[in-house]
Length: 99
Length: 212
Length: 108
Image 1 (cartoon, each protein chain N blue to C red):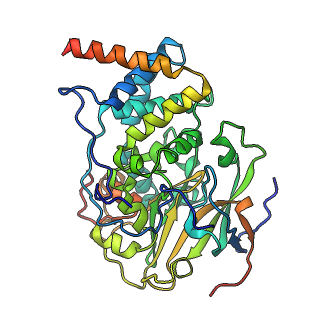
Image 2 (cartoon, one colour):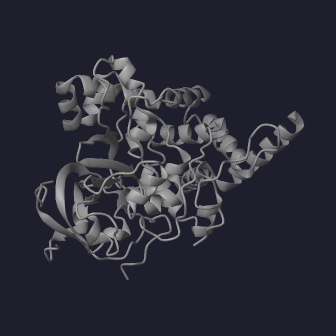
């Protein structure tokens, strides 16, 4: 599978309810970050959880978020970040440039 | 939300003198049923336990010390953590990719798994209880500086903190900074400075650290 | 709608409290539970995938999630997946547990 996003590109995590088993933590939904790296293609955990093969494999990204964009009341300095691994089907091109 | 357990993964009851708990009984029953059905043997279970017992923070500390003393190795470690650990003779399994994240003068890294308890277990063994606790999992992503301070690590505002949430197929280990005043130490001496907590990112090694 | 998420998905949730840094050494039975998953999830068997284990743990409900210890959650989920897969039946498991309880009581 060809990765749709490139390192350095801004992406937004889809806002959708958490149904079944998934590896997208709720706190990044709707948030915009930057692709830190492409991790490779991996079987889809949302399918593996129900004993299916999880194929086709999906591109997995490490997305870096600015803490202040995730937590409006974040107490630390501007540069602090959090990296989260997110599968491509949870990402879309950045809807807005944050900060 | 229940606070009745103080947000920690409380210690299980001791197993031997009292009657077995429901869950201990279940473990024995599941294991015996699977052995009877030839899914695996009792020896397989014993070997698997031994394999995990051999995975200790000392293995990760050896990787860190090598990276501190061999710049080419450090480059390989940051490029492909799994391969660099295998190069040291470690059995990394086939289930995940290890990503080493480097602390520098201006960046400090810490790892967590907010969804469960993902941890670089094939490198440094099973995680401590607090790593799996509600308190750590909820707070390290939101107030990392306060959490690190609880561990005795006060970082200046000029140091960027990068938290890594291990949500999918990557596992992380922090490559700490080599402490000052260790210029004439051997690789073995350096490894002794690197504790488990240094590789999680809630501590930093010092020239006086005694690894446990 | 998108704020609906599982109890296990706890990053940033309030009320975490101070971190209790006292640990415990893993008991043999806990290491065995861990070993069971390693053996069952090994591609040569592929009877319980790690994501199935997690799905099972996430579905035990918030109060059980907090009350059970870590490996109590694991053995609960592992066993449920094995029953779903038809590796053994719940009746077989119940009988085996009763048999072991009797055996252990007479051994004490």
